[in-house]
Image (cartoon, rainbow, N blue to C red; front, side, top):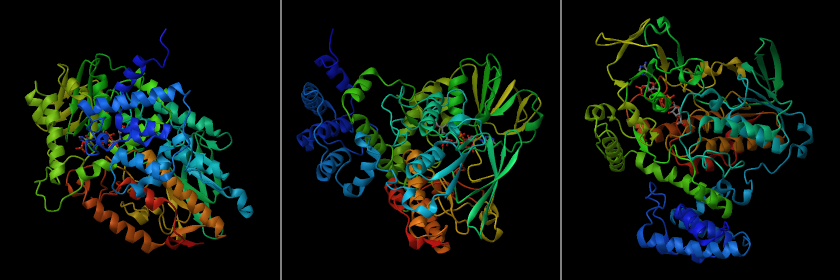
Length: 635
Ligand code: N01
């Protein structure tokens, strides 16, 4: 029987390897920088190609180089060379993503790579070092992705905390969104904590049950006994100036109310957790079952039914692709079409050959993660940045954005080549990335082209008892109506009442226009820290877990600053907050989502982009690396 190291197995696995990640991984393991010749450098602009533009003879050369190195490595009993010095590591990174500005990225990459499982984002200090703060307690609101990341870091620093969640289980968005077809649209090797990486994801883009299990297993590893209050809603939080503490009024699922005091709050409630039902007349009159995508009713059997789905965003596209083959008739109500990102592997399992690479080439998974980080993040920003001199007539924001538009339009053209009447309906007029681009492997076109599916673009005038009436007076009769109409994303921290210094309520202060410094702190609300707060959503550039981890690190830094400086709380300075927001607003205007007038959940009711981060990931990393004492009043 062939050993797992025979030449055939290795060659088959290498055919599935991504060369830009493979060669640095082997150089890292063997200490041999000759594995990174200039002529085999990937082209970072070729981010749609898994091999970064390396093809033909060069690809063969790269594979042979890797084959020889790998054989030697395996024959040595997989003996790793000692970790490279920073200069060598920089060479490896430069090979992967090009030379410019790599020095700046190096510390970020070291953290993000977590090579050899080293957790470089751990706080590195303990509350025991500050004896008078032993009773300092943090209240985390939300036990989803961000709340668990916060709990993990507080745990490492030995800080006492309680974690509240209105739901009966941990998991946040991955618990609430359990609709058919739900899966992540960021590759999982990237969409995962730096401190809890896995190299055994079953699919490149995991399904909701797999992700829910991932977050729940992270919660189990934390051992939250005694800290976790599930089925418990935080109704209000008020800052008590005398004691510099927050008073939380909470209600458990049995209706019992309780008051709890904490020294700091970490709000980890997410941006996409309050369903938005459409403002359409008559929705209360519909006689059949109706529900929001994030409140999926598993008891409703859709088999053979006449089903309507309102919306064509990320949720709707997954739902429609998943249910089209077993419902009787499906009416998809589209107000604005969606750009699709071609992603052939979207529903694919990770092949055995790739698993072999992860198992047998230590650190390949990390380099692969970093290659994803680069090509799914920083490399994409130029494509969606505004060129003020470009006249794209509302269809594109720069020459590069126009090029992207042409590529995406060609993809739609190919997908709908046999249905020209559908093609004209599904091509957006707005620039790519003005709204969320949705991943697709052909499933959307396949679903829409089915005989039992109709894409309805006539505006809806009302929901009736029997279905939906269109503006032209026709009525579509439905058994079940599904609202895939998104979330109240700009209504941050609702419906909680949060009262800060001087009795000011946070939402009164915001007036529908939420702002925070770095998405984290708000003047007049000392020791209230938001994770995934205002202007910290990313549109195309990366995984939101990265942002949450950066913000959590910053919060730990703030807490340490309080302890070091023997204070009780930090209050963000008004001028720091205001200047920061002016810059963020200007930068957002220069991105596709800020420049375009198309409606999107990125903007609040005042039309301001209150959700999105307009800069690079490096910039968020730098700005959140450590709090500056000049930005805060110490109370
Ligand atoms: O919500 P959406 P979503 N009449 O707001 C339509 C993340 N996510 O739940 O575009 C008719 O994007 C609305 O039309 P329009 C991801 O970040 C990720 O789909 O406003 N239609 C739109 O088509 C995503 O961006 C994943 O004109 C109405 C749809 O409803 C975010 O969540 C999966 C209407 C709402 O789209 C939100 O996505 C799912 C009305 N009155 C979600 N009101 C993955 O990881 C609204 N619409 C894959």
